Length: 173
Image (cartoon, rainbow, N blue to C red; front, side, top):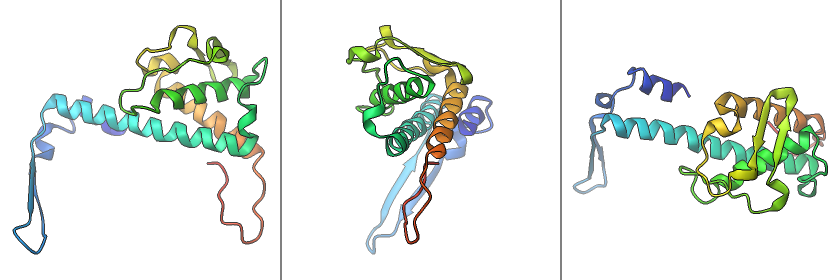
């Protein structure tokens, strides 16, 4: 978010990125020049944030599956962990087909409801989101996502098995 905020306040501006790049190919070389305008810089910084969110949510979902198993994603009724897992799962699905323009894919009837994680003040009502463009305020903004990520990290680490001697796998982070 630092890059996005720097762009918004003008600390990073289009002139920052006006330069030429030459790649030596043992021939004429490849020459690239890029001029960036304010809108392009704004779009790129937003895409950087969404791309980071997409990668993060995939890793969080994977860590939760490793810690708790993929079959525990839909507890009934959902407790806090189940609600958090459902939110993460739906975020992952939204980014699956286009990480920079995520669309909510809420096809399974199980997910068409409110999922609430009261201890971290994150709640998402998926009942009307199917097919809509994802926007951060739908899941508590960037702050809500950060609280969700830390909640999931702590939950996964609480059941992480100690490494065996010679085991090169990593625990959920």
